[in-house]
Image (cartoon, rainbow, N blue to C red):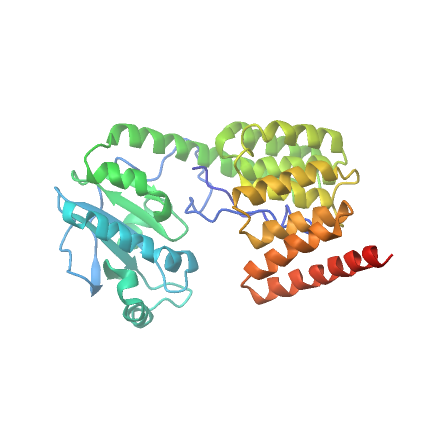
Length: 373
């Protein structure tokens, strides 16, 4: 998957901050676009250096004939914590086939400590039903994460029966590869080729991403549009963020709304077809009060919002909120109340609930006024 860089602050509107995928990605732009990291899929797995085994049977070395997942995490990392039950499920599923999952934690600048790690592991209990280790002076982190130029956690490395790296990436996305590796169905040459292609795209993407950010900072919209289009062309199947950027640049910044709508219509046949987040972003940008579209096609917004919520089985509060707002702007306060009420029922975040409640009050007042009038 093409990693995406954090440009949310630059691509924001008053009503919507674009999505950012914080997946593990190279931490810096390489000077040479065709130069791969030292550790890639297909490489021999490095040795692990562990100071203390916090949980599970100590692993002296990554033995050939066995399969390992070496996953890097920290106590402050929300996505790491959310992924723990999944790792436990995988460990249980493949234990009989020789899989060992090792969660490696290290000292870092954000306060991760051995004491905090031991405390969390004890508290999590069966939620962390796999081996947990404390790195020795970040040597394992350097051998895996730094060598692979991975800058974010959680990040997992699958080591196959032959001691080769078969996967590098987010642990929530490794299931298919792991199943193939455990059952010796994977083609390491093909996996290496795919990873190399992804890395090459990533390097080119980083250069274009920097150009896009600079164009936004300078409000050079033609240049921003050009960069977004190049990013889309680089990897069309994984271009959701840049499709949104082009849509917003055309409609909200350059005020060429007809072109923006035509572009979005084409994208709904491909990239946006099953991308609920992107469809919701289309709708929110159109209806934004500030920095939105001057020509607001509410039918288009309703279509996008309806499909986005449907893809989420009408169970995502933020998407229901969008749907309610579009209905309200179209003059159907009753429908707005219906969807906003459901959004409020599903929401758990206090700040979000407060905002949803304010909108619901607005919709109810309009619905009552319409009935009374």
